[in-house]
Image (spheres, rainbow, N blue to C red):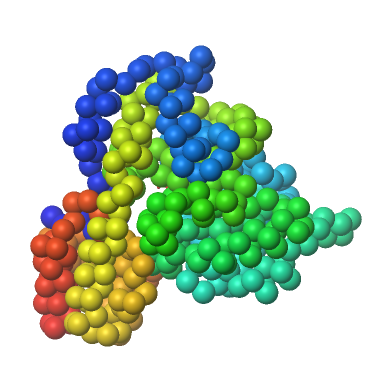
Length: 343
Ligand SMILES: Cc1ncc(COP(=O)(O)O)c(C=O)c1O
Protein backbone atom coordinates (compact mmCIF):
# COMPACT_ATOMS: atom_id res chain seq x y z
CA UNK A 1 0.00 0.00 0.00
CA UNK A 2 1.16 3.54 -0.79
CA UNK A 3 0.02 5.54 2.21
CA UNK A 4 -0.57 9.19 1.38
CA UNK A 5 -3.21 9.83 4.09
CA UNK A 6 -0.92 11.78 6.38
CA UNK A 7 2.66 12.37 7.45
CA UNK A 8 1.61 10.94 10.82
CA UNK A 9 1.97 7.46 9.28
CA UNK A 10 5.77 7.82 9.28
CA UNK A 11 7.51 5.13 11.30
CA UNK A 12 10.28 5.95 13.78
CA UNK A 13 13.82 5.70 12.40
CA UNK A 14 16.32 3.12 13.70
CA UNK A 15 18.10 5.94 15.55
CA UNK A 16 14.82 6.87 17.26
CA UNK A 17 14.15 3.27 18.31
CA UNK A 18 17.68 3.02 19.66
CA UNK A 19 17.32 6.23 21.67
CA UNK A 20 13.92 5.09 22.99
CA UNK A 21 15.46 1.88 24.31
CA UNK A 22 18.12 3.87 26.15
CA UNK A 23 15.84 6.64 27.44
CA UNK A 24 15.26 7.55 31.08
CA UNK A 25 12.08 6.64 32.95
CA UNK A 26 11.62 9.57 35.33
CA UNK A 27 8.09 10.67 36.23
CA UNK A 28 7.54 13.87 34.28
CA UNK A 29 4.75 15.11 36.51
CA UNK A 30 6.46 14.26 39.82
CA UNK A 31 10.16 15.08 39.93
CA UNK A 32 10.69 15.37 36.19
CA UNK A 33 12.30 13.24 33.52
CA UNK A 34 15.71 14.28 32.13
CA UNK A 35 14.89 13.30 28.53
CA UNK A 36 11.59 15.20 28.55
CA UNK A 37 13.36 18.22 30.06
CA UNK A 38 15.95 18.05 27.28
CA UNK A 39 13.34 17.87 24.53
CA UNK A 40 11.43 20.79 26.03
CA UNK A 41 14.61 22.89 26.21
CA UNK A 42 15.55 22.02 22.62
CA UNK A 43 12.04 22.83 21.42
CA UNK A 44 12.01 26.18 23.22
CA UNK A 45 15.39 27.05 21.74
CA UNK A 46 14.24 26.14 18.20
CA UNK A 47 11.14 28.31 18.65
CA UNK A 48 13.02 31.21 20.25
CA UNK A 49 10.90 30.95 23.40
CA UNK A 50 11.83 30.61 27.08
CA UNK A 51 10.20 27.28 27.83
CA UNK A 52 8.29 24.32 26.44
CA UNK A 53 5.91 21.63 27.68
CA UNK A 54 5.67 18.19 26.06
CA UNK A 55 2.11 17.20 25.13
CA UNK A 56 0.54 13.99 23.83
CA UNK A 57 -0.84 15.64 20.68
CA UNK A 58 -1.16 18.81 18.65
CA UNK A 59 -4.85 18.96 19.51
CA UNK A 60 -4.04 19.02 23.21
CA UNK A 61 -1.28 21.57 22.76
CA UNK A 62 -3.76 23.86 20.98
CA UNK A 63 -6.43 23.32 23.61
CA UNK A 64 -4.01 24.00 26.47
CA UNK A 65 -2.84 27.16 24.68
CA UNK A 66 -6.44 28.42 24.51
CA UNK A 67 -7.09 27.61 28.16
CA UNK A 68 -3.87 29.30 29.26
CA UNK A 69 -4.28 32.47 27.20
CA UNK A 70 -7.97 33.20 27.42
CA UNK A 71 -10.73 33.58 29.99
CA UNK A 72 -14.00 31.69 29.45
CA UNK A 73 -16.39 33.77 27.40
CA UNK A 74 -13.70 35.60 25.46
CA UNK A 75 -13.55 35.54 21.68
CA UNK A 76 -10.89 33.90 19.53
CA UNK A 77 -10.28 35.30 16.05
CA UNK A 78 -8.95 32.89 13.48
CA UNK A 79 -9.06 32.07 9.80
CA UNK A 80 -12.23 30.14 9.05
CA UNK A 81 -10.50 27.07 7.62
CA UNK A 82 -8.30 26.56 10.70
CA UNK A 83 -7.64 23.00 11.76
CA UNK A 84 -8.72 23.79 15.30
CA UNK A 85 -12.17 24.96 14.11
CA UNK A 86 -12.69 22.21 11.58
CA UNK A 87 -11.01 19.12 12.96
CA UNK A 88 -10.56 19.41 16.72
CA UNK A 89 -14.19 18.67 17.56
CA UNK A 90 -15.15 22.01 19.06
CA UNK A 91 -12.74 21.94 22.03
CA UNK A 92 -12.43 25.69 21.62
CA UNK A 93 -16.06 26.17 22.72
CA UNK A 94 -16.91 22.86 24.38
CA UNK A 95 -13.87 22.61 26.64
CA UNK A 96 -12.18 26.04 26.70
CA UNK A 97 -15.54 27.85 26.86
CA UNK A 98 -14.49 30.38 24.23
CA UNK A 99 -16.48 32.01 21.48
CA UNK A 100 -14.79 32.22 18.12
CA UNK A 101 -15.09 34.10 14.89
CA UNK A 102 -13.85 32.46 11.71
CA UNK A 103 -12.51 35.23 9.49
CA UNK A 104 -12.33 34.97 5.71
CA UNK A 105 -8.89 34.28 4.35
CA UNK A 106 -6.82 33.54 1.31
CA UNK A 107 -4.68 30.40 1.37
CA UNK A 108 -4.98 30.25 5.16
CA UNK A 109 -4.01 33.88 5.73
CA UNK A 110 -6.87 35.77 7.38
CA UNK A 111 -8.02 38.99 5.78
CA UNK A 112 -6.25 41.80 7.63
CA UNK A 113 -9.11 44.29 7.23
CA UNK A 114 -11.51 41.72 8.67
CA UNK A 115 -9.12 41.18 11.56
CA UNK A 116 -8.80 44.92 12.17
CA UNK A 117 -12.58 45.26 12.28
CA UNK A 118 -13.12 42.21 14.47
CA UNK A 119 -10.54 43.04 17.17
CA UNK A 120 -12.40 44.72 20.00
CA UNK A 121 -12.14 45.37 23.72
CA UNK A 122 -14.42 43.90 26.39
CA UNK A 123 -17.07 46.42 27.37
CA UNK A 124 -20.11 46.05 29.60
CA UNK A 125 -22.18 45.20 26.53
CA UNK A 126 -19.52 43.71 24.27
CA UNK A 127 -17.51 40.50 24.28
CA UNK A 128 -13.83 41.29 23.75
CA UNK A 129 -11.11 39.57 21.75
CA UNK A 130 -9.19 37.18 23.97
CA UNK A 131 -6.85 35.56 21.47
CA UNK A 132 -5.73 35.75 17.84
CA UNK A 133 -4.79 32.49 16.14
CA UNK A 134 -2.65 31.60 13.14
CA UNK A 135 -1.85 28.24 11.53
CA UNK A 136 1.37 27.70 9.55
CA UNK A 137 1.53 25.63 7.43
CA UNK A 138 -2.20 25.71 6.85
CA UNK A 139 -3.69 22.24 6.59
CA UNK A 140 -6.98 22.83 4.78
CA UNK A 141 -5.39 25.35 2.45
CA UNK A 142 -3.26 22.49 1.10
CA UNK A 143 -0.15 23.09 3.20
CA UNK A 144 -0.04 26.78 2.25
CA UNK A 145 2.62 28.87 3.97
CA UNK A 146 1.63 32.13 5.67
CA UNK A 147 4.06 34.80 4.42
CA UNK A 148 6.24 36.40 7.10
CA UNK A 149 4.84 39.86 6.29
CA UNK A 150 1.35 38.57 6.98
CA UNK A 151 2.41 37.07 10.30
CA UNK A 152 4.13 40.29 11.27
CA UNK A 153 0.98 42.31 10.50
CA UNK A 154 -1.30 39.98 12.46
CA UNK A 155 1.03 40.11 15.45
CA UNK A 156 1.26 43.90 15.28
CA UNK A 157 -2.52 44.36 15.01
CA UNK A 158 -3.16 42.05 17.97
CA UNK A 159 -0.32 43.66 19.93
CA UNK A 160 -1.80 47.15 19.48
CA UNK A 161 -4.88 45.88 21.34
CA UNK A 162 -2.92 43.90 23.93
CA UNK A 163 -4.28 40.61 22.60
CA UNK A 164 -2.01 37.51 22.66
CA UNK A 165 -1.32 35.46 19.52
CA UNK A 166 -1.03 31.69 19.30
CA UNK A 167 0.57 29.91 16.35
CA UNK A 168 -0.59 26.39 15.53
CA UNK A 169 2.70 25.32 14.02
CA UNK A 170 1.96 21.61 13.78
CA UNK A 171 4.07 21.70 10.60
CA UNK A 172 6.11 24.83 11.34
CA UNK A 173 9.33 23.20 10.14
CA UNK A 174 7.73 22.62 6.73
CA UNK A 175 6.79 26.31 6.64
CA UNK A 176 10.28 27.33 7.67
CA UNK A 177 11.84 25.07 5.02
CA UNK A 178 9.59 26.56 2.34
CA UNK A 179 10.54 30.09 3.45
CA UNK A 180 14.20 29.06 3.74
CA UNK A 181 14.39 30.35 7.27
CA UNK A 182 14.45 29.11 10.87
CA UNK A 183 11.27 28.14 12.72
CA UNK A 184 11.95 30.85 15.31
CA UNK A 185 11.69 33.50 12.59
CA UNK A 186 8.03 32.52 12.22
CA UNK A 187 7.45 31.93 15.94
CA UNK A 188 8.62 35.46 16.82
CA UNK A 189 5.21 36.66 15.62
CA UNK A 190 3.36 34.66 18.27
CA UNK A 191 3.32 34.62 22.07
CA UNK A 192 2.93 30.84 22.05
CA UNK A 193 3.57 28.21 19.42
CA UNK A 194 3.12 24.47 19.24
CA UNK A 195 4.59 21.99 16.79
CA UNK A 196 4.37 18.22 16.32
CA UNK A 197 7.25 15.78 16.27
CA UNK A 198 4.77 13.07 15.21
CA UNK A 199 4.15 14.27 11.65
CA UNK A 200 6.81 14.69 8.96
CA UNK A 201 9.52 14.52 11.63
CA UNK A 202 8.65 10.82 12.06
CA UNK A 203 8.55 10.45 15.86
CA UNK A 204 5.69 8.22 17.01
CA UNK A 205 3.92 10.62 19.40
CA UNK A 206 4.02 14.15 20.70
CA UNK A 207 3.93 17.90 20.35
CA UNK A 208 5.59 20.69 22.27
CA UNK A 209 3.90 23.91 23.35
CA UNK A 210 6.36 26.79 23.78
CA UNK A 211 6.11 30.26 25.25
CA UNK A 212 7.35 32.38 28.12
CA UNK A 213 8.32 30.66 31.39
CA UNK A 214 5.25 32.02 33.15
CA UNK A 215 2.95 30.92 30.31
CA UNK A 216 4.35 27.38 30.25
CA UNK A 217 4.11 27.07 34.02
CA UNK A 218 0.37 27.84 33.81
CA UNK A 219 0.03 25.61 30.75
CA UNK A 220 1.33 22.65 32.77
CA UNK A 221 -1.61 23.04 35.15
CA UNK A 222 -4.12 23.11 32.28
CA UNK A 223 -2.41 20.13 30.66
CA UNK A 224 -3.05 18.24 33.90
CA UNK A 225 -6.65 19.42 33.97
CA UNK A 226 -7.39 17.97 30.53
CA UNK A 227 -5.66 14.69 31.34
CA UNK A 228 -2.43 15.31 29.49
CA UNK A 229 -0.11 14.92 32.43
CA UNK A 230 2.88 12.92 31.26
CA UNK A 231 4.40 10.16 33.38
CA UNK A 232 7.33 8.07 32.09
CA UNK A 233 7.44 9.89 28.79
CA UNK A 234 11.23 9.63 28.42
CA UNK A 235 11.15 7.20 25.46
CA UNK A 236 8.66 9.38 23.58
CA UNK A 237 10.73 12.49 24.24
CA UNK A 238 13.87 10.60 23.15
CA UNK A 239 12.32 9.96 19.74
CA UNK A 240 11.29 13.62 19.60
CA UNK A 241 14.89 14.72 20.22
CA UNK A 242 16.16 12.54 17.37
CA UNK A 243 13.35 13.94 15.22
CA UNK A 244 14.54 17.50 15.85
CA UNK A 245 18.16 16.57 15.35
CA UNK A 246 17.85 14.51 12.18
CA UNK A 247 14.53 15.03 10.41
CA UNK A 248 14.12 18.78 10.00
CA UNK A 249 16.67 19.23 7.24
CA UNK A 250 15.12 16.59 4.97
CA UNK A 251 11.61 18.11 4.79
CA UNK A 252 12.44 19.86 1.51
CA UNK A 253 12.52 16.40 -0.08
CA UNK A 254 8.84 15.89 0.87
CA UNK A 255 8.04 19.23 -0.75
CA UNK A 256 9.77 18.11 -3.93
CA UNK A 257 7.78 14.83 -4.08
CA UNK A 258 4.57 16.76 -3.37
CA UNK A 259 5.25 19.00 -6.36
CA UNK A 260 5.98 15.97 -8.52
CA UNK A 261 2.65 14.48 -7.43
CA UNK A 262 0.83 17.74 -8.21
CA UNK A 263 2.47 17.98 -11.62
CA UNK A 264 1.35 14.41 -12.34
CA UNK A 265 -2.24 15.21 -11.43
CA UNK A 266 -2.14 18.47 -13.36
CA UNK A 267 -1.12 16.55 -16.48
CA UNK A 268 -4.17 14.27 -16.05
CA UNK A 269 -6.53 17.26 -15.78
CA UNK A 270 -5.66 20.86 -15.02
CA UNK A 271 -8.75 21.27 -12.80
CA UNK A 272 -7.34 18.83 -10.24
CA UNK A 273 -4.54 20.96 -8.83
CA UNK A 274 -2.33 23.89 -9.70
CA UNK A 275 1.23 22.71 -8.95
CA UNK A 276 2.34 26.33 -8.44
CA UNK A 277 0.18 26.38 -5.30
CA UNK A 278 1.94 23.40 -3.74
CA UNK A 279 4.41 24.92 -1.30
CA UNK A 280 5.01 22.09 1.15
CA UNK A 281 4.08 18.40 1.59
CA UNK A 282 0.28 18.63 1.29
CA UNK A 283 -1.51 18.41 -2.05
CA UNK A 284 -5.17 19.27 -2.20
CA UNK A 285 -6.85 17.68 -5.23
CA UNK A 286 -10.21 19.11 -6.34
CA UNK A 287 -12.58 16.47 -7.73
CA UNK A 288 -15.75 18.42 -8.41
CA UNK A 289 -15.34 18.09 -12.17
CA UNK A 290 -15.51 14.29 -11.85
CA UNK A 291 -18.95 14.46 -10.22
CA UNK A 292 -17.80 11.81 -7.74
CA UNK A 293 -17.34 12.47 -4.06
CA UNK A 294 -13.94 12.34 -2.37
CA UNK A 295 -15.00 9.38 -0.27
CA UNK A 296 -15.77 7.37 -3.42
CA UNK A 297 -12.42 8.33 -4.92
CA UNK A 298 -10.56 7.23 -1.80
CA UNK A 299 -12.41 3.87 -1.86
CA UNK A 300 -11.51 3.31 -5.54
CA UNK A 301 -7.89 4.33 -4.98
CA UNK A 302 -7.62 1.95 -2.04
CA UNK A 303 -8.54 -0.90 -4.38
CA UNK A 304 -5.56 0.18 -6.50
CA UNK A 305 -3.22 0.17 -3.50
CA UNK A 306 -3.25 3.91 -2.76
CA UNK A 307 -4.44 5.22 0.61
CA UNK A 308 -5.60 8.83 0.73
CA UNK A 309 -8.02 10.81 2.91
CA UNK A 310 -10.82 13.20 1.91
CA UNK A 311 -10.40 16.75 3.23
CA UNK A 312 -13.73 18.05 1.88
CA UNK A 313 -16.75 16.53 0.14
CA UNK A 314 -15.07 16.96 -3.26
CA UNK A 315 -11.39 17.22 -2.35
CA UNK A 316 -8.71 14.73 -1.38
CA UNK A 317 -5.57 15.56 0.56
CA UNK A 318 -2.41 13.73 -0.50
CA UNK A 319 0.49 14.00 1.96
CA UNK A 320 4.07 13.16 1.11
CA UNK A 321 6.55 12.03 3.74
CA UNK A 322 9.72 10.04 4.38
CA UNK A 323 8.33 6.77 2.98
CA UNK A 324 7.20 8.32 -0.30
CA UNK A 325 9.73 8.58 -3.10
CA UNK A 326 9.40 9.20 -6.83
CA UNK A 327 8.33 5.58 -7.49
CA UNK A 328 5.41 5.83 -5.03
CA UNK A 329 4.39 9.21 -6.42
CA UNK A 330 4.39 7.93 -9.99
CA UNK A 331 2.43 4.80 -9.02
CA UNK A 332 -0.19 6.92 -7.23
CA UNK A 333 -0.53 9.21 -10.26
CA UNK A 334 -0.93 6.19 -12.59
CA UNK A 335 -3.57 4.66 -10.32
CA UNK A 336 -5.50 7.92 -10.32
CA UNK A 337 -5.12 8.35 -14.09
CA UNK A 338 -6.63 4.92 -14.80
CA UNK A 339 -9.65 5.78 -12.63
CA UNK A 340 -10.02 9.26 -14.13
CA UNK A 341 -10.12 7.86 -17.66
CA UNK A 342 -12.78 5.32 -16.73
CA UNK A 343 -14.93 7.59 -14.57
C1 LIG B 1 -2.52 22.29 11.61
C2 LIG B 1 -2.75 21.19 12.58
N1 LIG B 1 -2.88 21.47 13.88
C3 LIG B 1 -3.07 20.52 14.80
C4 LIG B 1 -3.15 19.19 14.44
C5 LIG B 1 -3.45 18.17 15.49
O1 LIG B 1 -2.39 17.31 15.77
P1 LIG B 1 -2.67 15.90 16.45
O2 LIG B 1 -3.15 14.99 15.38
O3 LIG B 1 -1.33 15.51 17.02
O4 LIG B 1 -3.69 16.09 17.53
C6 LIG B 1 -3.01 18.83 13.10
C7 LIG B 1 -3.09 17.42 12.69
O5 LIG B 1 -3.14 17.09 11.53
C8 LIG B 1 -2.82 19.86 12.15
O6 LIG B 1 -2.71 19.59 10.84
